[in-house]
Image (cartoon, rainbow over all chains, first blue to last red; front, side, top):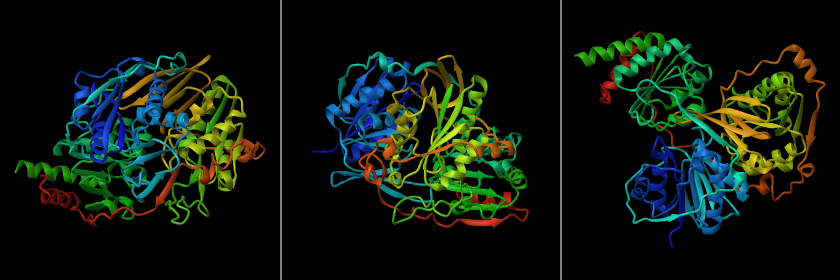
Length: 322
Length: 259
């Protein structure tokens, strides 16, 4: 019998998240994929999960899962795990995924592997591949002496592929206990972002500490505009308050995988590398020839970004005009 | 209000962290350590809350004797006292073991709020705060980029994928704070002097009532099997700008047919 692998499905902006579909694809590849979908979801969400490989969906549409964070979801999933004992359960390294899995781990007294980039089932156990310390190590880990193996999976670890399965939907009861209604979601505020979004961008121009200030991000915006790309930033630039967190690329920000990644004034701390190192082409401008980012670059220029970037913008304009 | 801050002392940011292939743990011996910047932000947030509402800030940390320097730093910033979980029996704990040890230590204290960083800057597993909250039986309020405490409640702006959420819970609670929630203060001379007189309480696994089946390498559910290096990227071309750097990048973009 195939190993049963569960995926904790997430909805964001009224859509099934890409990482949910990535995890389902992988789960269906190595075993029998099933999903748990809690809280309100758009019409057709179950069909989408089935398209990407879910053969069973445990479903409860009760709004308690949106109105109260973490605890109702963890209670429901813990109950389902104890009842059905799947071999593995996958969660996205998202805000909700991390919250639910950490609570579950303590609740079920079992371990959890974070930051999983890939996994395989070996001799009935799990072998997870983890890009540890950002990019500099690639380790494998396992979970011993426990039932369901809980894994937190990095976004963009797997290619999502359609692999439609006949699907059974099992409606489950909501977690209604008053003791679970402790973390109130009062309001969701969307912060409007300008320009193209990082998610799904083919071309990203990213700036770091070397930009020296908020005003210089305008220059990166100009470069991104002539290339038709989006602007990102390292944690240093975000922590300095130059750009909003939504632009942060790295382990604590977004994981991106564009065709072209231009790292400008970014030294390449492991924190940053882990969010962008799988980009197809990495192009770097940095004044420090010893900056670790150069080791990951397909093309790099050691020099003053304030001279090189304007010249690059002019040159692209010239060639595009030609 | 009484605040407990959980944070880690880690190899300094100047150190390139290595993993020992034998023990499969990070090499911590003989490298300079510092209070994790993420933990410093958690301490700072605690100090700001007690400056407003009164009370104490207690740092709880687990680590070897290298942790002392970071603990002193937190005390010099203004933390009231510290608890150091220092025992070979705790070494090699996985995240759940770490959470069990920290939660057991916190249970010995009186607290209204526990503040953690969302993740430490060395291992980034990011599951310990949620585990501690469950073990303490308090609501987990996570990914805060702004905190306000009012009477018996905490309200936060919680980082979300597309903005923020306003989230509220009753105290006592555990809150995890994102990096960048504040700019941690630098210890001043007066703080550094008074830190020397502040109490650092040392606790062992046995003091916490935790056995080898719960903490340390023997209690860890997560086992590292292999430590390796990722496949190397093919070496790229690195040039030094001699006035043509921008043009050379444009040439490369043309070569890969982007422009």
